[in-house]
Length: 457
Image 1 (cartoon, rainbow, N blue to C red):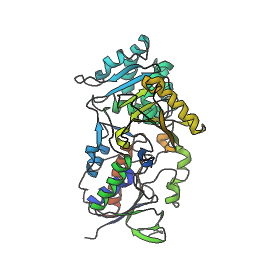
Image 2 (cartoon, rainbow, N blue to C red):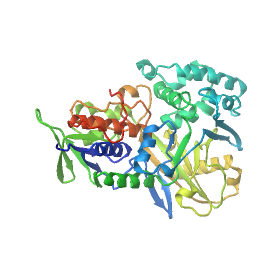
Image 3 (cartoon, rainbow, N blue to C red):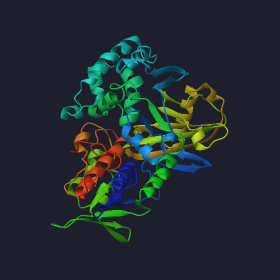
Image 4 (tube, helix red, strand yellow):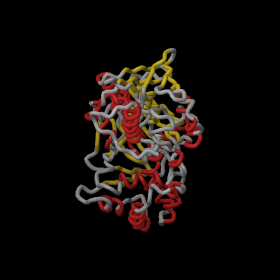
């Protein structure tokens, strides 16, 4: 039996997941990436003999597809996963409360004690949290009306004050949806809270890379793809030629060459998909309909340790989340803190010096030891189009995996995965795209590792 020929355009997490799943099923696979590296939106760079990630990416225990992807790459031992959710939340002056789950109580009671003693809210606001959380469990996240309203408006209707939104709800909504509650789709926000915090006690335990992301995803991904027999072409652009009427198969233009494929997975950002598949009418305007939401990261290197925490969240400060990346960067003396600023529109027009000054001052407010430490180095990395904009109406704008052209399949965290633009959503989309590409190519053998059964719009 002839092996199906499948071409994957895009070497991010979605593209790598799709390529591996197709190769595991016995297909002949070529993966093309215009950049000279794999990893997509997760990458690392070298600066002053240290490794820096473009952004601080985390995952949760409920991110089962992403965790299986790490297993497939052989790097599951290079991430840190909490034994239970425990987030230090610090206000200026160093006042700290913790969002910590019980080891023994089931969801949603597992967070009860933590929320009742959460010191960044007054007693009245704390008592109103449980009724709102229970109401959130009843939200129909698939209803069109749910996606037409903001999470902030829903919170107001359920007794949540602006202080509660700032000190708690946005602490979770902003980094996951990449928008504050007042701008985020209720459907996406409700999905995040229900899946991560209200379904299973351990679902929201937080994980992050112990090594640079370029090593975790890009380098390990290339090795896994090559072991699976995938032809990997980097540093070259690709464009998909659609089959003529009545014809089958695709012609993929890769730089100055052409390849023929039985099916194609287009796994590029939504801002680039129309350029890769220009003949597909259904993708026209998708970039404008989904929009973009930026993320800014500030990297601060001190001459001495300023905190003993692995990571922390900030309230009432420019510092949203801060991670100790000293060991991962290869720093032998001092401490390197990476500060992630999601929904970073307010920072995009500010100079790098202004952003660094605000964050360094914020760190000194949170960590008293930082006030006497010397900043050895500081830099800003910006991702202007880090994710699609998960605003009301975004669910209707996200296309499914299949297209009007049989055999042309989409993948990416921006497609209709039901998840926000996360690493989990990207891997799920790649797994789903692989299944549809294999079916379109006439291949019925299942991949060696099961792919997710997603409902595709």
